[in-house]
Length: 282
Image (cartoon, rainbow, N blue to C red; front, side, top):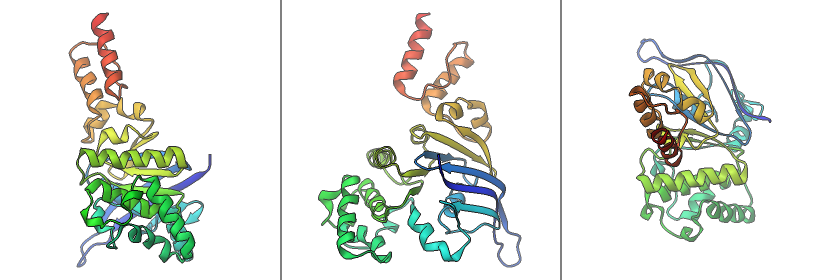
């Protein structure tokens, strides 16, 4: 499988102010994301999640090492537009990403800035809104929509630019449970049905559990990397770095501490219930 994003020996530090030393984030980070995959990135506050995400489309540039997007060096100014066509970013607050007073005009903003012809923009906007389930709201005012709907509009704006990869930096952090479900359903659909590479930065373990791969960052390095079951079964490691596993895994872990023989890779409620039933029945 081809590589969508490659991080090679990444070094990055935020510059200091008034002769104060800078803040080092990464010293030698290595990571690859395969095309068509869905990768969740976890970590406690300050571990570098958002900093890494901003390297994926040249918002930030390495102090050392390299980041490649679809084989393109993000530090090459001549490739900036091509890189941002290939990697779209969705941030926490959807209100900060909405620039127009009508939904379809907002979704058209990105393609217009790429110089796409009007007939093609019309087609892209309609297709993008249908993909996120917001076509019927195309003539609505964005500020009247719910948080989850606004975030889906923000995602549609990225889809309309036809990127190969979407990076979402805690897109559900400001949403209620319904809005979170709407956004995650949209992201999963884009990955599974359209083959778009997804990188999800999140602090919600249940969201990360839906990914194909989970990467845990700690102090600027990779602390764990694998399938959700492989990563979340490492409960003690997660606890040491200030994280928790999904609730079902935490329940099994606590019961194991009290003598029950339960697996630590049961991520959904049904799997957890079956494991508990089997243990009690035995």
